[in-house]
Image 1 (cartoon, helix red, strand yellow):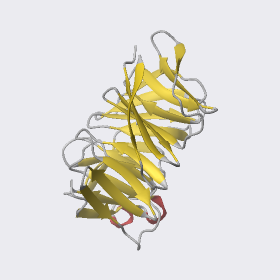
Image 2 (cartoon, rainbow, N blue to C red; image 1 turned 180 degrees about the horizontal axis):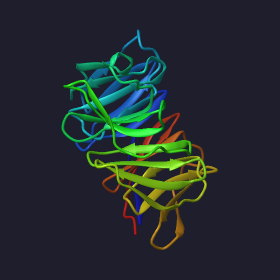
Image 3 (spheres, one colour; image 1 turned 90 degrees about the vertical axis):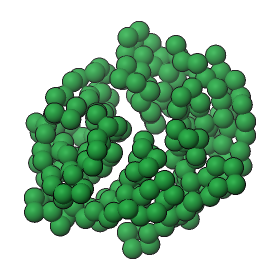
Image 4 (cartoon, one colour; image 1 turned 90 degrees about the horizontal axis):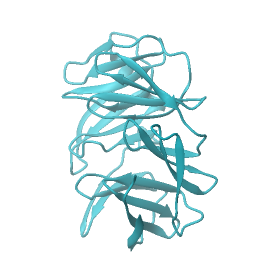
Length: 240
């Protein structure tokens, strides 16, 4: 079951998604914006250039990753800079291609020097490897407090917990863009069509939306946002 709830005009280059408090995040002209009603917070860092990824899982600790500078920035809920991290300054050799939020004062890191997943304590500036080496290329990833999820170039899906235990979750259909809904299901876009896929049933179900060409989608708590050049269309959706 899916129904349209609202439309919102936004001029943006990249739409990042919505947090638990219904603030929307997007990038326009290299400026990160966070908006809700009349509230508008912004952040820009010219020195570090293009943002590689942004993690909004915890809206009080927003993680910006700049791969070209092997660096990350932590922002508070008003997009004020809390801390800047240069992984190259650590006593251990860290060249990271993945950074995401983890528990307490830790960040998930995928260290390209040894192909291992690690945890970085940004208050103590301490890093430790927790996983065995991963040989496959990471095609897509998401992180939360307790888990690091990734999909490799052959569309196999894995999870790693904070103790370094890796579990193979299954193989996924091919996709152009994907978002993890749970450890058993995903929503993915392929050839401008949107699907929900469950590992339990091994079936993909078409999600019928009006938009046929769109830049990105974002799902959270039964709310589906579709980002087009005209703005954002919001849907209420009940997944099986």
